[in-house]
Image 1 (cartoon, rainbow, N blue to C red):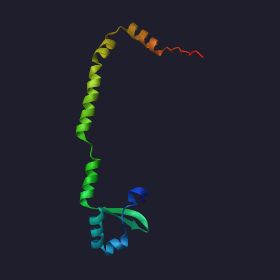
Image 2 (tube, one colour; image 1 turned 90 degrees about the vertical axis):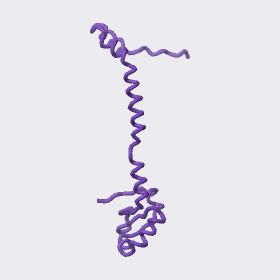
Image 3 (cartoon, helix red, strand yellow; image 1 turned 45 degrees about the vertical axis):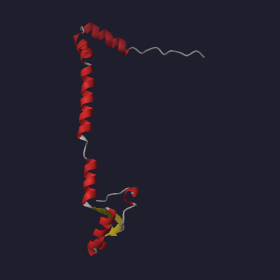
Image 4 (spheres, helix red, strand yellow; image 1 turned 30 degrees about the vertical axis):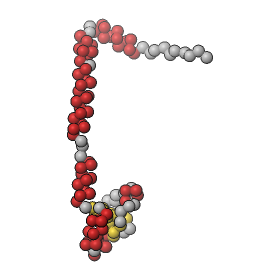
Length: 117
């Protein structure tokens, strides 16, 4: 399995080969502490990103949905739907013939208004 990383997303990260990682985990740890993350390559290709716990937590927080914002959107949508209650009640109270006439009227193409040249 190969993952292709965007160049801009990895261009600023220090790079460490898997061999260097095994041989020098303490040095790599210091680099992660200094930069927040390190790109680990395997056969000169990006393979992993080693990052600090704090940076990982920041990414997790950024990925979580803002429930208060979603709740506000839901409340606004519900209010719009409830505001149409009378119109819907009127539509359901219409006689079938009146519904048919309204449907035919809505389906007729409207004549285009020509502009004077």
